[in-house]
Amino acid sequence: MKVHLINKGLITGFLDNNPKCRKDISIWVKLMNHADWHRLSDIDHTFALPFISKESREVKFEIPSANITITCRYYFCTHRVHIIVRHIQANEVQSH
Image (cartoon, rainbow, N blue to C red; front, side):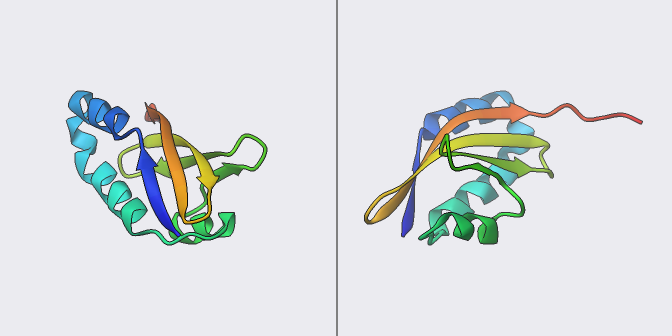
């Protein structure tokens, strides 16, 4: 089933404040737009090790190249998978 990405305004707002992440988030959006998911395990096959909570219908996508986490809620419906972007977080870089 095709993915319907909801709340793209949150992505746009994040990119306005973090333009260096534009390329990495654009790749993530492109993968989402081309995804064909029928079950939760399909998310694992598209993205390496996302955190998925069945109870809260939450999935966290880590984008290590931009050091960000995109938190979404998912709903598998009859003909589409709705992915609602809820939060985008820039992770602090650990210095050693």
